[in-house]
Image (tube, rainbow, N blue to C red; front, side, top):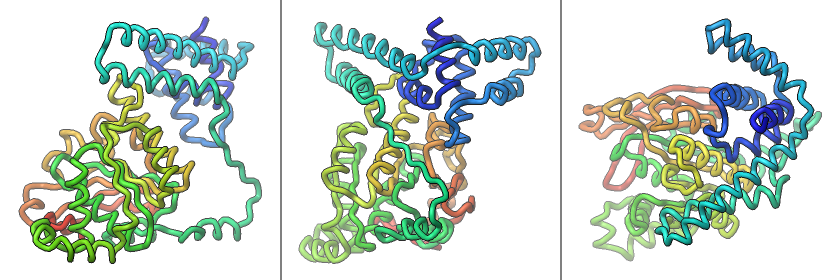
Amino acid sequence: MAERRLLASCIKSRGAFDTIEQFLDRSDFTEQGQLLLQQLHKFYERDPKADVADPELILSAICRELPNPKHHVVFKDMLASLAGMEVSPENAAADYVAVKREKVGNKLASALAAGRPPDVVGPLVEKYQELLESELNPKQKETQVLVGASVMDLVAARNRDGGLIRLFPNSLNERLDGGLLRGHHVVIFARPEVGKTTFVVNSNRGFLRQQLKVLYCGNEDPIEDVVLRHVSCLADMTKHEVIDDPEGADRLARENGYDNLVLASMTPGSPKEIEALVVEHKPDVLVVDQLRNLMVGEENFTRQLERAAQAVRAIGKKHNCLVLSVTQAGDSASGKSILDMGDVDSSNTGIPAQADVMIGIGMSRDDELQGRRVLSLPKNKAGGNHDSFPVRVDLTKSRVLSS
């Protein structure tokens, strides 16, 4: 009965679905319930304005996925029954969160009593706090509604706070229709050692030269190495040249915006820690390097990546900053120049769903020998261009240049 009440609530209320999905554990549901939840996720994602789900469209989607007519009958009866149930969606969702909080609280108490290490206790504390805050602030999500909005105001809003933010190299920015807006979320993905950090450092150089404030939250490389790479890029000097002339490198870096760069080392960090830094420093651009290491209180790795992407995207929208997130590409991307969504490691659906623009960085053996990388745009809401194109890299200065 508990599952049926939750599923009926998700059909009748998008708000209830969003609350339940935030803390969803698929093992709480039968296979039929899991399939229905998947279709509800797709339904609400396709239509951001939908407040309730259409049972007939959900059934149609399930029937296309399951060819057996017997399954069609089962889900037809199931959806008819759920649609006719008398439920209070908001209370059902709140009850689900309360039960989850109690279970996590019990696990946390047991872990503390047993003296478990921080890597076990930490995620439980994070999860418990998220559940507690959700109960204390059930209406924490902000909804923006526009009816007959003025075109002049919309254009003015687009150009407010400096308008479009350019991304570099220029060959990339041209394919983004001139740049991106605050609130957009860019996901950068590539195999290890291909050039994710080089791309990010070069992007930050471009942001800083536009007199924008950049907050870089890194949980991969030692912060000193990241600082040195930014100075090298801003000063257009190799690492050894910076070491030989630190005073000159410092002067050149500051001339190019170094004072507007905030670098935070996280071990590994959480969305709440990142948001606290955003509130403190008020950046125009937030960089998260990398998503896969963030603590989000989720045991399933695929779900962890999706929740991390959801969280940083929400931070960008809430605090009106452009967000660049970095994640890994899977084995399928090894030795490839052109990457697509399927090459994202462990989350080739969840992460892409949370991105406005995806930039894949590919490298074949020949690309490596030629000092070249290939940028692909498998998702591009900004310009609609899904092109792949070569760029030149100077790894000694963390520079990425148009070919």
